[in-house]
Figure 1: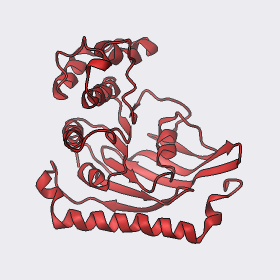
Figure 2 (figure 1 turned 180 degrees about the vertical axis):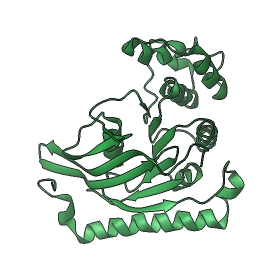
Figure 3 (figure 1 turned 60 degrees about the vertical axis):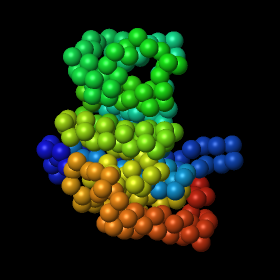
Figure 4 (figure 1 turned 90 degrees about the vertical axis):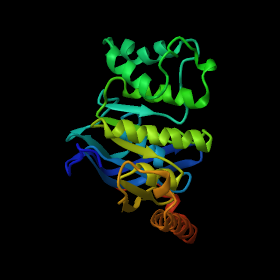
Length: 274
């Protein structure tokens, strides 16, 4: 863990429940999720598709309200978008009519504040985008666009960075490169990171802890500590210990899916528990 890691919770999720009202009826996406995210750690959330991982992450960001329960940042309730929280989405979401520099400036323009050019230049250099400020998104590869999105999210120095499957569309080599880059930047900053991923190997490489969610309605099924030293190497990732942990988590997810089919009524709750 980074030097800034302590036992003090940065984020606290308390009995988070979310019901979506759909044409076919109420859909219970997450049900009474509770989770503490410690200051300065990286936590990955994994689970079967449709289990509510993204719903949980977006509730942490303040972009999606909860039906019941809540999320606290440094002890204060999150009721909407928060300047202390940055987010990287599944897509880079760069504005196609703006060049890279203008895309990074965009959040500052919305807030009416001045960007820290020295910090942004340092980030661009770290991610290998120095000199690309005048390029438009169409002139950048997928990996370069995600690097730009990472710089944009970190440009205002958030204390929490939320990442929603940001590297899923990248090829395996670029994805490994991005994972190393995230770890490198995290080790030099006090940022707390929560990552949604479908890759257990990616979760193990990046995380201090891995949260396994149950099938919908999503609940916290288990939490695993990741004991491997940092910085992590590809050699560690090919070790028996990583292989064993990967299999344990995979089997938990498979077991949770099988349990879901054994109790189909669990996904058709009409109203959330209060």
